[in-house]
Image 1 (tube, rainbow, N blue to C red):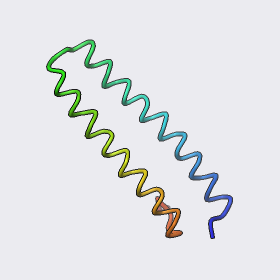
Image 2: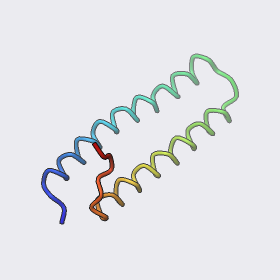
Image 3: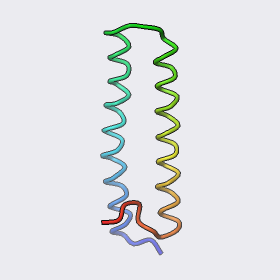
Image 4: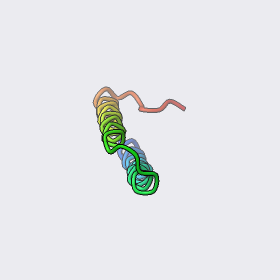
Length: 73
């Protein structure tokens, strides 16, 4: 059974992670504008970034289902 504390912790974790990931996404675009270079490089960086985010979300959801914490303290 999922506890209320676990849900609140997960929501706070998601909010912080969304802020950090949003800043990283912005940084990629900022570097592309300021430094230039081939657009393909930034496309590859974005694809790798999205893959890592999806894997992180899958891990988070699996941790909720299994009852194991995402991070052990």
